Amino acid sequence: MLIKPVLEQLESRNMPSSLNFVGPTSAIFQVGQNSNFQFRVNTPGPTLFFPSDGIPNGLSLNNNGLLHGFPKKPGKYDFLVAAVNKEGTAVDHFSLVIKNLFSVSTRMFF
Image: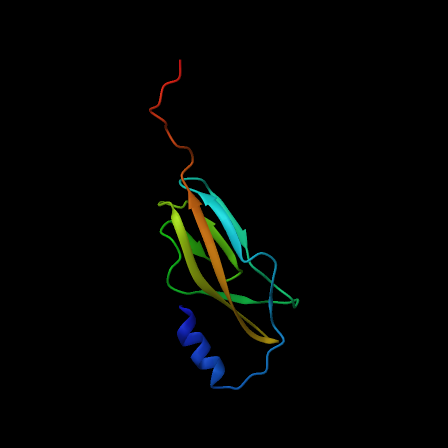
């Protein structure tokens, strides 16, 4: 499920929200390496997380807020993540940089 339908449904209920994301809003992963990042919110209890379009190939975001997988392509990726629980809703911007594991240099030093 993507963010837009979730937010439209919640906004139609006019729910006040005290829910906020806490912690980093960016991470660095490496191509082909098992990677993960845990999104967190400021309230206890069950929270569902939803991704927007833009999550890189090889990664997924589960309902518990764990972004995980094996990134396939280097680059900078920006996307939104929404969280929903009894305290309301929150949306945050997230930046992910995926780097090549290593670079091969053809330059020889003597």
